[in-house]
Image (cartoon, rainbow, N blue to C red):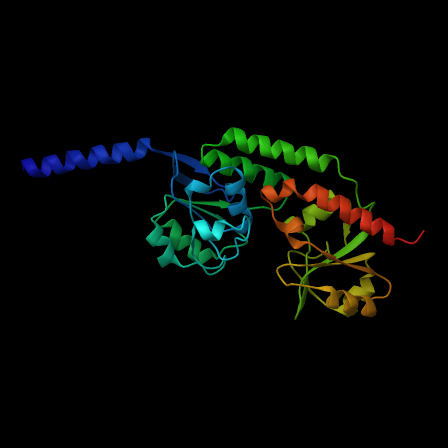
Length: 286
């Protein structure tokens, strides 16, 4: 009996200590998550959020990343690779004994996230707008005990984007995939970026990532067709094909990371967009 009481007492003390060392937060999907006060072993399931953690100076806490976490290059050398964003290895993650996992509603598989959330604290981002992205930066920084750094980064991003020139209301079709052709419609972060740059998304009447065709694009006659370098790696040969098929539209190859990465890469985006807008202006007939 004494041993049982002693074991129960130790258990209650341990539970009390664990409760003290965690706090309840609400992620961007509206989920309540109990996260450590000071996470030490973080697994990031999203490339743009991995880059954010490193740029916030939190790399020592990053234990696992995906194979697509290309920035910074040292991320995949320093942290363990746990698979792709859609097909992460639960077994590899378990081996890392994470005390926090950071994912994204769109980029990660729902079933996998539910499996992980049954075992670990999983904080999810859900990004549709520019403001969502800034909130994510502040929230992730706060989770990691770096609130001041996150707030300063978000402010710097806001300042940089406020000084951008704009697309003067020109219409754009933004393509992300081939076979079948897929474009960005409404309800995507890329759509929000196009709006922020004062472009009119020619496929804004359709949701998310609709399939399209050269025939449909010819009918819609966007001023510009933007071919993204990711997730499908459009290249110069594709630009030539589109220019031949769509003589009434101008065609550009654009950096997909600048349009779709919603973390600290937003600090670099204004300089890129200034160059892009200048290039586009030089191609517009006088």
